[in-house]
Image 1 (cartoon, rainbow, N blue to C red):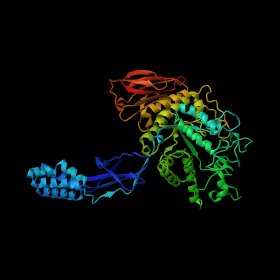
Image 2 (image 1 turned 30 degrees about the horizontal axis):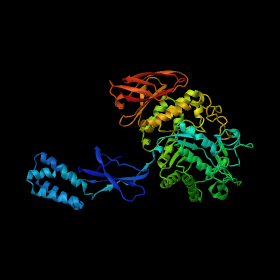
Image 3 (image 1 turned 30 degrees about the vertical axis):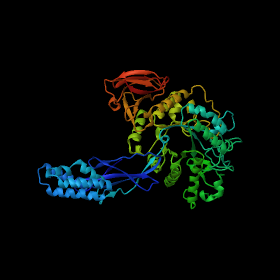
Image 4 (image 1 turned 135 degrees about the vertical axis):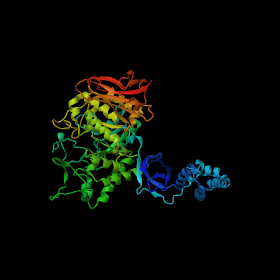
Length: 614
């Protein structure tokens, strides 16, 4: 990190970067170095998951100031006898601050100064040896520290690099008209693992309310046998800490978590802070909710949308402390069951102070907990949630389709201030969002969007059905036709036209190439066609370089000359390099910066290469 450090006058400065784990009481420190003008820089190694605090402390470096002036006078041929007396006094003062071992070294230095010939005395006092000893024991009498303690949150690698697979547990079976069980979900895990996913994300698994239950296609009245929306949480069987009996028991869920772990995956749960009207909290804690003048609980609305099957808690009710603690305890409950990743539903509609407190408290107990903010909202609110503690965030990638849109948005995310604190998760689709590009572009669009999501961001996700290129929508909307939010589904996971092989191959390529584990290492390449997008990612030492060339037009073949940034990649213009294609394994030998690609979206709409200098 860097800081501007300055004071009046010409005196020299010194600075320390002091840091500690949040739970520690003593500070460790490392020296900062002057970079340019008044800019100083420093760094420290974070070797554990958790929260670190750091402050910057600076003071006048009296010996360095003396040494600078004395050296200039000596070079100019001026008499510095008095200055030598001042210098010796500064060395003697440093001795009083030293430990016993260095104090003995100071005695030897002082004796050498006192017995040296005049010219040798000058050389000794101005030497780097003496300066180094004095620097180790500085006079920090006028030291000042930064007004605030700054915080760094260190997460595990899965907080930055992970492929998510979102699914409705009740739709993982084979029997029409009935819910799947956790055993059915366990049976699907080998396939999901083979596709290369790291996280299996489940929409809410809790009992579903019966009051105002939604029917098929979001009908306001449910027919017998309609399961309702899993986001209408809570019924007689329990609330946020209970499991829908149709899925199984808490013990069955534990077996599912263990099975996922055995396949190298972890389970993420949806944390939706909302209730069905028959959630136990409504009866047990009515003060947590708002009621209308007729005595009925106020259901959720986002005009003109109405959610009759959902009621929201009142975060600022007189008993809010108990409510906040109860919500936190829900997360702690599932963390105790082995869940370390939570996708939070609509966090931007809840108080930021709640998230600041809740996330900090949970991570104090479970430092490896990951929180993903599902906040498709205004940019500043999204940034605020990231600063409040959310590990990852949904993004606008879902709606960025053109070359200009993608280039501008990714440049903002990877080069702007938010690169320091915001980790986007590029979901291609969600149960609520079937983007127009997927509706209209068909299989080619699905393939392209997958490549973009999986290579532009280290963290990305798909909602089940994406691998089948499911794109049937309610006309004029981004809603899925016959959405599984309101009914049981039985999927043919091997139906013709699926892109499972490509997903598995690219996820394997992601794991093999460290450059794709990073986000801010993105660089776009010039391509002379508005529908052709090209970019590179590389590790800092150039040992791993990935090149992607994509045709953003799902309807027509496009051709462009792409200019590779060879200097950035550490490749001389006359040096040959190899390109190995991720999906086909084909190899090509190239030389020079400019190369022409023609991409037919019906064949392979995006090309992903590993670039290796010969």
